[in-house]
Figure 1 (cartoon, helix red, strand yellow):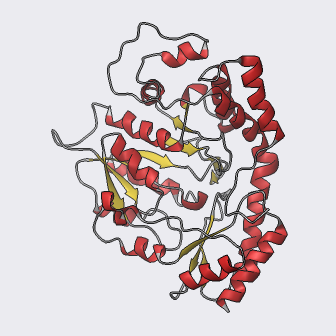
Figure 2: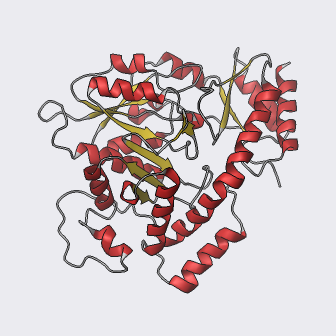
Figure 3: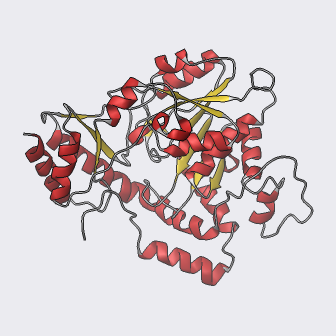
Length: 381
């Protein structure tokens, strides 16, 4: 098989889970299988089942998180003003789209060059009375200085929405991402640390936010989650606010349950071992810099971006691709998109000119990583 930058790692167990739902359950929508997936996610994270709200994408989870805050009457802001969310510009466009979809305004912030994560000093400069929350993005699975983000939020009276799309399975100072915090959003799309085909979840640490999100994912039909998990429907609903069709199906949940069981024995060791091999072989290479992580954090890398310095990025990419090695760029900063255009963010723009993503997924072999690093060395020396 040709080397892939990222890929789904699924097989007979996931296929059997889908067969079971189709042939034995017979109901493909949101039901008992989805409830079981939420319960297993909650048990794995060490939280209560009510805190886990599965969704059909990670973007949906982010949208519900923002929406749940937008709905709070106690949020600050001038009468008629649009609530704002501080968010690093160097992130997948989903972060910005979710904020806008939920009726808020993304405020693009700069990042730290050594980690590509949110620069709190820059974020503080962008604070005003309409900012209601801050959205740190765990870029490349890195929950960099997350305690500082929460301290900042407390001091400024803000809520925190973690875009943890890359970070399922990671730990910050010994605590699993999603086991603590405010609102934490994961993605389970096809190439994430676990997949449900398409999917995601919101983990909420506030009952009111959790209930609003659970209802909003089902077109804001109040209490419909309980009905569907009991195998019934809500036939006389009361709709009091906007909702979406964001729920996770039984088929997707069945895949996710198998993947969750494979996470610790298979996926975490494979991703960490391959990343460590990359670090060993690429460390000290001229014109290349690895992104930093906190040694007290347990990072399960979803992607492996490196910085190619001194204007060599395009030549480096071309050299690897000439040898059949795919590369990527994560990401074009959002403030450079026409729809989100904003003032200059020098460090985001610098990193955009440097970042190259190398192949990483549990289907890679050690020999594959050696081949990538050998090609990288030849391109830079």
